[in-house]
Amino acid sequence: MEKSADPSSNIVYKMTPKNIDDPEDANSSTKADESDLQEVEEVNESLDELTRALDFFEQRTDDIIAQLRVLLDSNREIRQQIAQDKEKETIAALAAANISSKAGSNDADENTNVAE
Image 1 (cartoon, rainbow, N blue to C red):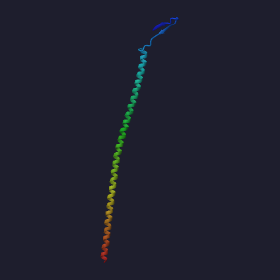
Image 2 (image 1 turned 180 degrees about the horizontal axis):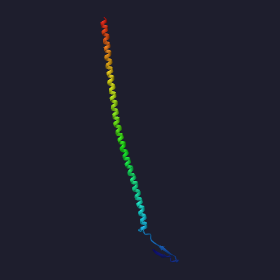
Image 3 (image 1 turned 60 degrees about the vertical axis):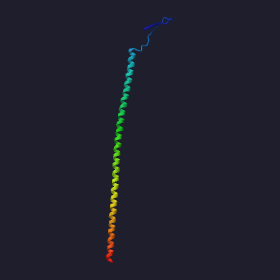
Image 4 (image 1 turned 60 degrees about the horizontal axis):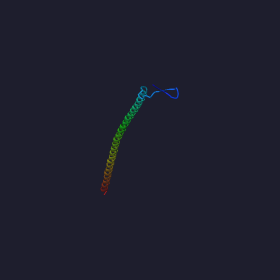
């Protein structure tokens, strides 16, 4: 510690230069730096967790979309098959009705010919 006297008075001032390399100041600075680094590390870990959660939900969404597309394609194929089956049934029913009407018409013609 240095002492300095004011030449105009008998007062003695204690003058100590601020030592940047003072262990107390260095410790408090280091503690602050460590605290900041720890806080940054915690934020990074939280961000990593959020990123993993978002990746999980993105993958799950992609899987659901793929399953929905498969279901949609399957549904489309089933509807087309049902439409084709109905069309075949309609054609078969019309053919049967046509055969029936021809048979009835032939019977009527035969009855007419027999009566003459």
